[in-house]
Image 1 (spheres, rainbow, N blue to C red):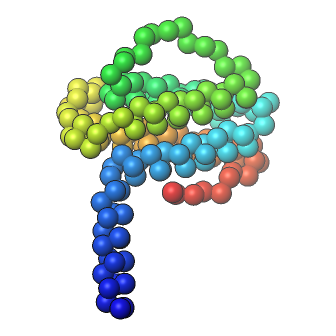
Image 2: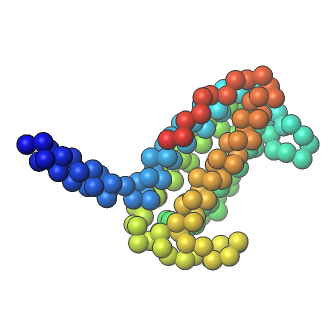
Image 3: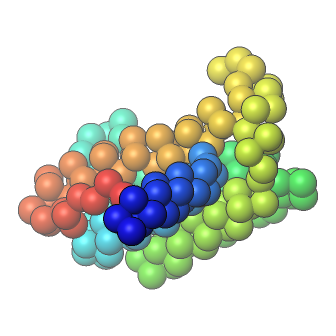
Length: 169
């Protein structure tokens, strides 16, 4: 009986692993990344949204909106069948508007990526840094968020705001 249970456990484990594709792994991480970035955005007082550590750096608000713009660009340019039209960029003036825009960008990216197939990730696309696979673009989506989120944590610390606890997954 123990042998059968062990065999059943092993088969179930293998089946579960087979379901873990780069897309499903990305989407799990993406949702956690969204929640973590939103916590960071919520932690900064609204009166500090125009804070920037040096003259050459972006403000806290501009960092968040840069992250949003990059998500919109990469997801629609490389993964969407319907290309986004160049519309007039809305002005996000309040903390609540910025946070809502960030959430929407994450959710829109998730919706677009859910439609991608594992085979599609092998496709090579033209990118300003040279030809890349769509898998590399997918990795860049997360890496870009992580890069700027790290900067935002420094902004919080420089303003004596305790950053939210890190979580990797």
